[in-house]
Amino acid sequence: MKRIGILAHSAEGAAMCFLAACHEGERRLGAHFHPDIVLDIEAMGTSLEDWDRHDFPPIAERFRGQAERLAAAGCDFWICPDNTAHMAFEAMQEPLPLPGLHIAEVVADEAKHRGFKNIAVTGTRWTMAGPVYPGALGRRNLAFAVPPEDDRDVVQAMIMDELVRGVVSDDARARLIAIVRKLKDEDCDAVVLGCTELPMLLDDTMSPLPVLDSTGLLARAAVDVALGARPMPAWHGGPLD
Image (cartoon, rainbow, N blue to C red):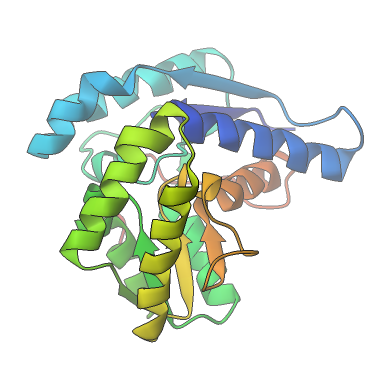
């Protein structure tokens, strides 16, 4: 069985992904069993000014240090339950010491498998305006849409001011549902919860669109790799073709 390394950036999303992987492992292996998992996290606050400047090299170096610690802890591969972080991973020039699963590739594979055609993308403002999901969806010939700028500001605020700090409110849930409903009216047929904390607000029971939960999908893919049901990843960071 392979050892999973969680290269964490935001605490809430990483904790949710950790638990989802443990629960998935137990579902498949039996009560009280799951793959070995090592979680490494540095305070996200050290990188926020770099994100605002789109200055990826210092963020990437912090991630490299985390990957090195995961390798030293005997991990076979890593996952990062933070969609925005993949902008820095894709910008890397030197390979990481461990291979990793790319969260947007996992989500896009699921979208393709389920037959969706036009995907709404939600997440931080960096994710909604950035290249990660356009690249992953475009490589599968899937269309996508993002909320208009004022709605992106709303989603950014609910993530950074509330969700990443463990605050969940009915008001934020209602605002997110309204934003997704507008994307449905624009002919989107599914929505990516492209911030790993957004499942704290929305799931298939209340969403106007079918949900692609990046947190849960990444956790399940990691367990697949750990149990040999999915090939080991080959990506060590850097651009994707």
